[in-house]
Image (cartoon, rainbow, N blue to C red):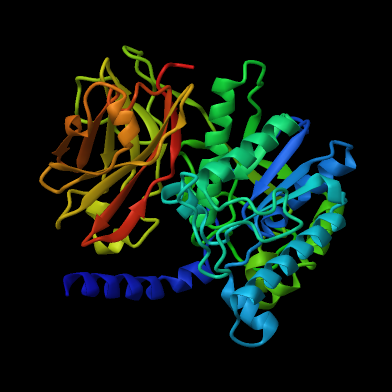
Length: 481
């Protein structure tokens, strides 16, 4: 009963906040710094058809005009958007119609890229399941655990025009295709979703590209790490203000200023804005449903973020805080690793003690220590869950490690890679947790994790099992490289 009441309260608050979603106000700030020069070889990774135009259509047009020949990699066919398919086919749709709808949306992407001047041979379509990339990341990782799309009812790529038709819907397969694409294209700049994206496919895509770059950095001796530009498409009440304003500029969301992201703009000429608008018109299936939102990206600029790499070494000197006060445990040198906007979810209204502000990290000889601050001391039981994937050369990326810190400071291990635990000293029983005021500390045994080189992690909060807040995932180097 309590969970149903909480769920009802969440729905009510979401409805109450709809005004701010449709009529948001832009952040008050000075002009953004501009990128100094045009990048060299560039690869843009996008989850859905239309993301390439919304996030970077002007950048693509400019690079192509300059002879830089950018590449675009599309992860899904958008074949999970049933509302769009029902509008297009005028009624309820069957799985085979969803696959046809996916083909239709990929054709729209081809037309949109042609409008930007991008030739067909510079467009790569992968064909993984729409609305399910997060499942590939969390659930369907191993080769024997393929996901089945809830909309198309298939568990492998069904599109003949996909790069590897018939590939299984697993996280390892998807990651492998991203790695192979990067290895083949050798970009100077990789453009992909910001880890704070709200849409499940977007933050999952960010995780996969980040994991691929980390793996290449550590396994390819001649690999030159590219610059990483991060874009936003889905982030609550952004862009602000919404609507068709081709003479206005985009600014970052107010809650994402002053945190871990440095924002810059790519100014667009009138000709680039016109090309971007023409490209957007190719998405007839999307424009029928969300014209006002899509046209919000037709502005005089495009914005991209950069995030510094986090390196932890035992006994490293202190680093300056990004946004907030340091954790209250003085036995370690803490590094602020993830910043998360305050008040960006219903946690601010349901329970401020579930509004997580980010993640700090530290390490010693045997443990990786994480500390997460809440907006306030919790008034009701709040569970804090940490999820992580660890990477070790010669092994690759592990299954997800999951640990829940209970309100009394005890911990529960939700998931643990059994092969890692068996291969090294100790095990998940060595995990420690502590609650101090509005801070939660979690300590993970590095030995039981197989002595990883790096880790990709995030933190979530729940009340009565209902998700209230989630930080971005962020890679952390554990050996200083």
